[in-house]
Image (cartoon, rainbow, N blue to C red):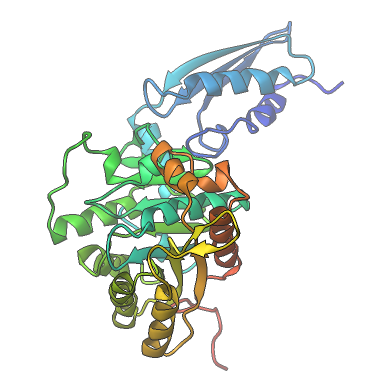
Length: 373
């Protein structure tokens, strides 16, 4: 039997993961002390990041469970404390690096960034974003969603997020839903209160969400943009020059014409448009036919025109049918890809997620580490 000592207990504590930060409590320097008496009674002191941490009970339970597995341990006592100002400052620097730096713009960052946009509202852009995020997470990717639709935020409801973000010395720790990290201005304003901001304030809010939020090591970041080609779309192109555009439209010609403009902005901002999603394409009928309530051809039209104007192929990635479960899931915070994964709508969205998951990040603007002889 191995000897019971402090190192063995530390090894056990390294398996205790902070649910919000996604890293072990030893790596986060949350373990204040470890004491062991002759009878095998172990006392562990843990400093939480903030007072009244809602996950205190989870951390305490996990500490007891892991330490109890160490041979020779008879009892485990956990004493909870709170980090002081210096500890929180050190933790923030360890997690987020230099202040006011957007991690996604760093040369070694490999996160794929997709800005999901539309020409007009009401085409299902946010519900596509929410379901794509969950579908990507279900494939084992680390996913984040930034609700950049400042005036019409809806992502928290669609993903079932009700808790507020945790703030550690100015660093914002986003809530997690279905394995997806989520941040939205809707988490910071009272219910029913409008956001009345002009361009500079919008830009600053987006910059703060990108630089001050602890996103961790993401594989994919999805941005739910407001419809159109206004301030937010321009700010995203400046703050995240490596982001790529995904256009959502409906089959209706009027919607498709407007969606085309949302994609053409890529030629002026040096962002690549990677594809088009046609939502509400048809209503499946009992006899297997398709009732095209909003006409047909809109997605193909946007794909063709963008390909022509931008000079490269912009594919139609999917045609998502009308599905009452998709609408109900968005209202209830239970995206359809998780509740009805075999439905035609879920299958179409998963098809897009699989295509996005296979894409590699653009090498534009990145150093390849190659020097001429």
